[in-house]
Length: 117
Length: 117
Length: 117
Length: 117
Image (cartoon, rainbow over the protein chains, first blue to last red):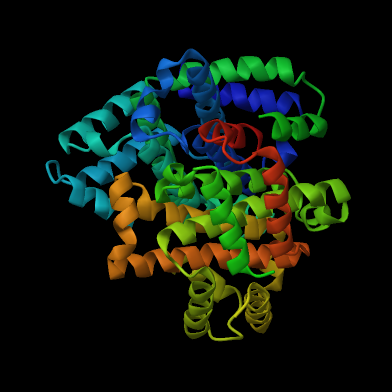
């Protein structure tokens, strides 16, 4: 099971339902944003410790997996519609991050991530 | 190049910089949300046609790939921290969607996605 | 009915339910983000024309007002917790925007908003 | 200085720059989402205590006020474009919340907020 297979499956799913006209880049960015919002709602009132322990509860784990899946599915669909190779883009970004954030720098580098990314 | 390799590479990258304490579920959900916000900003003022054509411009394509990569990297990192198999969750969600949205239903099913998901 | 009254009412509502410990800045930023996600879901599959006409339907208008209210309430609560005068900050930002975007510049200025803000 | 005045000022600002065609509901929802993303980035790597103390630092406070202002300005503009009275919608929502969450219920009510809202 690969990311490419997931993307192909999502495309076939959308084609079989004639959802192509709705799957414009703007609409899919919005759908992605909406799903990240739902994922956020699962964690918003938890303390840091509760959030870390959240997947230990089977029902909560199922909800988390469901929302992570929704985010992934819209991300994969958006990349497909835009003609972007998501895995290649991800690896290329880590390549660049290795230059921007030399190992061993710690929190300062995270601050830089937040400022520059 | 697989999603699992990308996840392992992200984990090693984080470990080498001792970023583990910052990569809590809540923090990573927020970081994911922030990156989706940056992706959104690339498309927000474009007409639907301009958004579809956006990847044709090399500089714009590079920015889009960069933001899609950021979203993917935080999503992969979050799933790793939560102990979730992202690909398996994605396929399981398509399985459920195939039951919820029988092929050939069209826009009504999209409305249902929005209401129920 | 003023924004200050709304903020005071929200604070009293939270105090009466002992929600203070949950209303940390991080939690409220996440809650705000989640509500914007719900607002986004109302518009994501609509064409631009459908989105413009959405408030003409009473049931849709009620949902839109409900989500806009949720966004406002968390924004007001967050500003209160952070000790920020939201209205003053808003006017100060327009003051700065009037310098950054001289009148009559058009779309180029919007591009600049997206790049710099 | 009232919210209505802020809204009128935002509308005049937009009109003077002929930004009306860009200020569609979908575009403004996306812009709102992008600004919430920027606000989120200010807090994502902070511990809860650091986030609470963030406004004590003048430079950080200025950035927080700037991002809160951006969120407010797009929210106000979106409500104006949709013909929604934001303050009235906010008060009406608190009215409904007072019924949904009787005072004194505590954390369980917050869980309910997350599930139902």
